[in-house]
Length: 278
Ligand SMILES: [Zn+2]
Ligand SMILES: [Zn+2]
Image 1: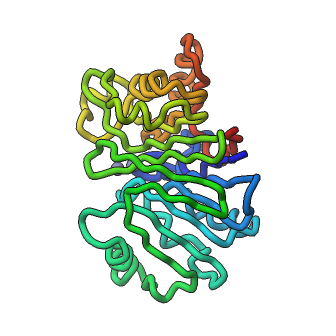
Image 2: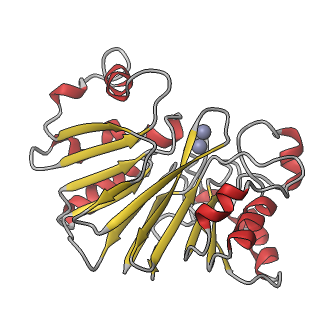
Image 3: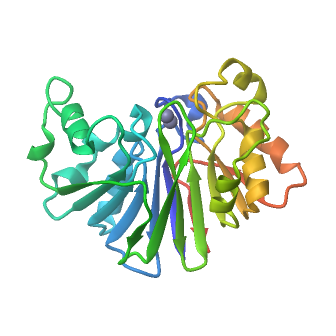
């Protein structure tokens, strides 16, 4: 059985405030562990500001090897990395998987983590850090997990990730640009996500907001629901909440979707929430 935990659910930039404290203000980070395999390893989907707490909590639980899969390199998906305390532990190993079209991954991270942008250079950190540039499927043997990436549309290249372990499956589609008709979903994407237990999908905008931000690289709630319907998922989780979306607004939106006769459950990602995936 896989379990996933949300450490950061917000898109674009961190938004801590009294109005966002229920769903959380940290940017993207989701942890996956396999309770039927090794407890020493964890998979992280993105390392936005939520990764700072994820690092502390998972190390405390005994995790020493981290497989970080980055959807892309926008700030809200990597800004927690320099502050992850596990980087300063010689007994921790980190593999960072991503596709980079601009420059080698290690070069990009080294530049971002060097003065004057950051005081401690990457090579001074104690953990063993490896960069794996790939957009191909990856087997994590000890975790008994297979990760299948897919390219999706955004303002820069983005990878979605499908995670399978036995019959348990998760699809992670953040920063996914939907079309203007809210309806067309590429056939390749539908078959890639087909039948997953849990679909975590970008749902940054309402239809009205989308009209003004239709090329900002994100989806509407309607489009996330459409992908979930076509892929016949069991559970859809709205993710990458707009930083200005208050808890009250999000609760109201969720209530509307919960009242729809859908064939799957609908939730909104909430920081700190842990879910079982079977
Ligand atoms: Zn983002
Ligand atoms: Zn982005």
